[in-house]
Image 1: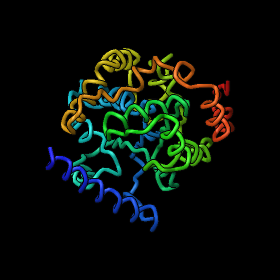
Image 2: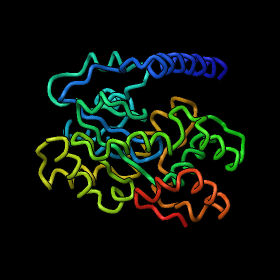
Image 3: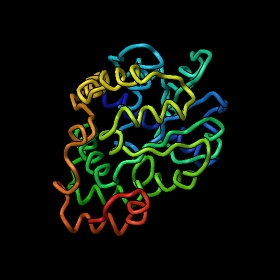
Image 4: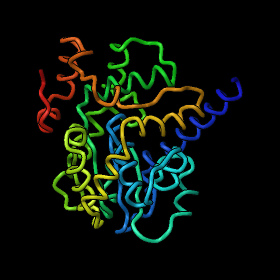
Length: 270
């Protein structure tokens, strides 16, 4: 147990060093090619579900472990990214990240997934309590989250950085809520944008194979290796909305922080 914590601590130090090198010095994370396709989002926004759907189409089947998903669609800011990038073959390459916007990514095609920031914050709180044993209250966590304490900045800063490019021809903005309500139509728009010819039948099969339970099982394969059985799911599969968990005062604080973005993305403020 102690060795496990030490190992995770050393990995976190290495992540911080990498982040500082790329963010402070502005060094690109990779050489982007026109064939590259990026699935970006703020954490807890449904990125893993979309990765499952894409994997089912591009690799012809389900994925059962996070390592396999990472090999097929590497996370850009993961420590193992260089090794995985070197093993990728010809044809379209798919990548995943929660990084804020950088213009060079738009030399490929970027799909940015956005989710109501209040649901994101609640889901992130659940994640930190289970994965990092965060001891604080939700009020304390929300204060940290809205002041940029998180690795990928605040929801407002991260989402806002990408919204600057929402009209760029190489960017597609989709909402998590639309993915949940109309998964086949949303997935079809993603594949069309990524210039992949996929039949309606194959899209429906990919969506059916990428259930909430399936995504949770894949996430558990990674979280189990970290010493927890947390499924990592998006707040119970997206069933628990912020209205059922946030007080009026907590909502007011978040709206004061990011109400302009909520409105611009079509989310209610009350």
